Length: 447
Image (tube, rainbow, N blue to C red; front, side, top):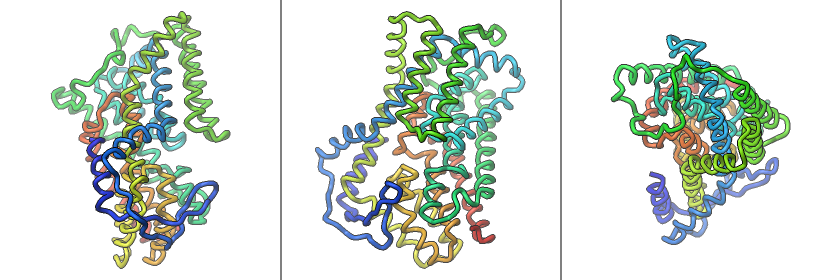
């Protein structure tokens, strides 16, 4: 699928004219200058360049690739110590198997809150825990992805305090930071409630008929509980490993909010947690080395896919067609009725998101163009930013060019084609809810 998109983008560079906007530095990052688009000499992608973009994509995605490997190493040490298995087994035993649906709902909101408050790639290492939990409840890896990847993507994409999309947009629009939070909070909570309902509904369906599971045949080695629920107890080592993991998570949260930590710092914390788990588990040097290599081996396919997906972004930059697509889509919005223009703007941002998967990057590339356009159409700046957030955030559920999504799916061993089959109905419903929120925002003159 990803290679097909690579070929398609390469072909489009022969069809779509190359163009560019002028850019200026805003807080150290390049932002588009409105009305500065111009056509430049075409730079179509040749056969060799199409394949050269792949190693360049790996180079561009090096930080995300490594955090996937670091997360795999950390999970490998926690799995080796049996701490995750015993913690999940003890949790399910305490809550009772009769409360499976409640556990799914609670964990969906827990992961959604991580997306809202902590970030996206920052939570990669949390995904395997959902896989163990889902299998312990009698679910599959697709359900695990719904609980973790689906909830975190929705929480992050529609977060009222997302610094990368809402925060960047408010800076560009010169609005109070995270203003209009009430409507965004209601939208985010509604979308997470839908995700929780959908997860429970899917669980009920596969429980009644296992043949309807989309996770059939997926690799669940080292993720299943190895003994009956009633046999799980946390010993001293399990508590120590769990405590180290929780301390690492708290360090990540503190660092992200107070020390401007990002991916490299989080990778370092994951490695420190892995080392600590190995030491308190009294692993030998040989056992620790083998655990590292095993963790890397399990995470490597996902890490490879992250680099592969990033190659698409590299091709867009090499072909200089990203700005042309943004420019042409903005032109299509001219002259539309007020309510239709808001929804069309959100749809346009959805399309652009597949070519500019970075939330802050998309904000800097499109909002300087969309904000004046929105005002000329009669939309408030807050409505334009909401349209951008919905188009960007919701489409991330199925965006194959988003490295973080590919990385998280790989951590729970779910192929993207099966994921799309599972999540696509949710995507359509949440988009519909988002469009209703846009219409309401226009009606109440959302500012």
